[in-house]
Amino acid sequence: MRVKKSTLDRVPMRDNVLWIALSFCALFAALSRPAAAGSAPPAPADSAVAVLNREYLPAVLDMIGDARRSVRIIQYEYVSYGAVREIEKAILAAARRGVSVRMLVDDSVRASRKNVEWLAKKGIDVKLDETREYREPGDRTTHAKMILVDHQRVMVGSTNFSDKSISDNNEANVRLDHPAAAKAAGAYFDELWNDASKEPAVSPFRSADVDLIFNRQYLPAVTQLFQTAKRRVYVVLYGANVGRPGSSVRELIDALASAVRRDVDVRVILDKSGGSFAEKTLKFSQEAAGAMEKAGVAVKFDSEEVITHAKVLVVDDAVVVGGTNWGYGPLHEYNDINVIVRRPDVVGRFAERFLAMWKGDQRF
Image (cartoon, rainbow, N blue to C red; front, side, top):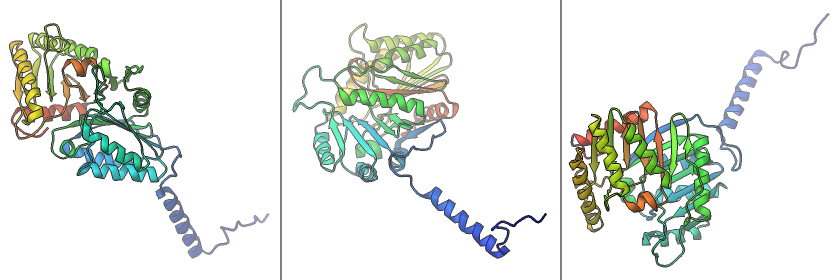
């Protein structure tokens, strides 16, 4: 029985090749075309990446540039100048694509207020965490620095939206392509967006190799890490204030002292930058350094030539990165977010940079 040939079978070979080529081009164009806003973003592979110093700006622009549904930002400081204007352009471009953008900014930096007003006039859903003209005792500081995209990718760390922070400081962040962690970060954002004056009802996010800790969850998590450390504890802080006897910072120092007695390699690097604001912070940090050294902890200050604004704790095979300094306010009152990563490549990079600074490198 004769089988009827298909249409494709009757096409001459040269036309067949042409048809395949055109089909491939059409497929390639479809795959290359940006997805419409509101479409489901592709599920990213879970990953964690250290984002240090000058790596921050391209990382932020990449995240916001890839956003398809939503961008959520929390910032302690928002000063429109230099590198920050590049971020503003990316935010406005995302909004023009139909991406939902929300940004929450702490009200304590006066320069941030006028920039929030400017961005709001451009159509961005942005607001201060408090709306009073002057801060009052008991007002909560929103010190977190977080960027969340499509509830799939999140970056947390120490970098403020200021040109100094982005272009010059020693800063440390971690970007997670981790939908489950991003979902927890989204819940935290929503709590602060609704009322930043209240303690957010968000549980810590825990997984095999990545945790997110919020606000008051930092102190018990870090204390436990110090108490169970077996090999090394490397600490980088912008500021530390020991406060009164029995304070939480003294408890952290006691945990470091206990680690020293267990023959753990414990070292601390503190910022020594100048300037009128930093003078008070430096005074507190010098007192903290004295308490640490008395407890047997090795302490160094960084170069006066650079601001080390990073907050990093390397403890054995884990690293804690975020925005929390050591003081009563940061530990007991501020809104802040930190990430704990237990991935060898990430932990290894932070440990390597710490040891380089310990040997005299100015840059983290």
